[in-house]
Image (cartoon, rainbow, N blue to C red; front, side):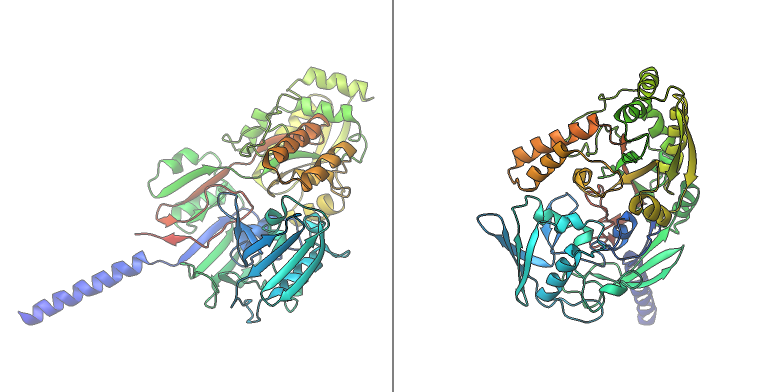
Length: 493
């Protein structure tokens, strides 16, 4: 009898151990729509880079958390001078880069000086324009002196473009990223997946996941079977197509519809005829039927926008009525602009479904007022090179997922080719204003100026349709910054 009890007891222990092993799953496959052009967030505007590396591989002095607030990261604390111009950051000790080199104040100085240098390739170089000097006071202290006070400076330091890199490895980060984060780069199978592994030497709280794979799943036709089969366990931003109700009714999954910073626009080249003509841009604005475009793009949950600003922001102004859908008025404006018979133009569309599918609807709507668009599909790398960098385009559709980025309309060399001194003055004032109420008023004024100028066709705010295994915890419901932060993700029973 004792032997039988021992056997039964041993089997129970084995069963318990097996159950514990199942409950302690530590791997995760995350589906993402776009493959990044490379993996260096300080050298490209592509959101697909930050969606993999932000907070996971790379870290900044500060970070933007899941609720949109600025939080400490590599800087454990900071002091600000009374005049708002000097920031003294106290850095965490014992931090190492993934290649084993030490992180210290010299790395911060290198990163910020590199980002603001004349030959900088940082896509958001403007974030660092207010910096006058960066001083490594001692290994754990950095003093940053600004030319003028900047209300958003700590927030700016939380962007992916401001992550800290080391001089020893910075040049190789595109293919072999080396940061200070809780995950390390493992491999990249081009066209398929980027794989990360847990960093055993991480300076902060260890992550629960041992392995994480970001798998490229470009559309609903591939995403839905991957989810249902369990090959992919989470889609932070799922191309769900018409299957949303089916997935919502399946108890194996959680569906979270949240907000993003993704202003989806019909971008216009304001520096090129005929789009340098306000009446032409107004005509295009009147020709856009937003509900049809939203339905065609496959995002029935998306809120309409009338300017480049998120409806989730407290300073948002509803300007969708500035140029209401009115094809007859659009035709009159085209005639007044000297185009009674319309004109031909090109529409370059990057890979996301909101662009490719929404672009078909936009082309159909503009055709009704006499604008004949040639649709040119381009890959993401081509879009970045042709449209964003070289401004070689007429029209395009893209979601701008950077946080609070209305200031891009004040940049002289930005791909919209838009210039308005009054708008620049508002943004310049905003940069040196810290009072929340005054900043909100300035944001509202800025929204109205670009809406009235019809700089772009403002379409909708990209919703975040997150779908993942019901046993997963810690994924973000909203996207206050372009990131798929896995630092708090774990499996439950």
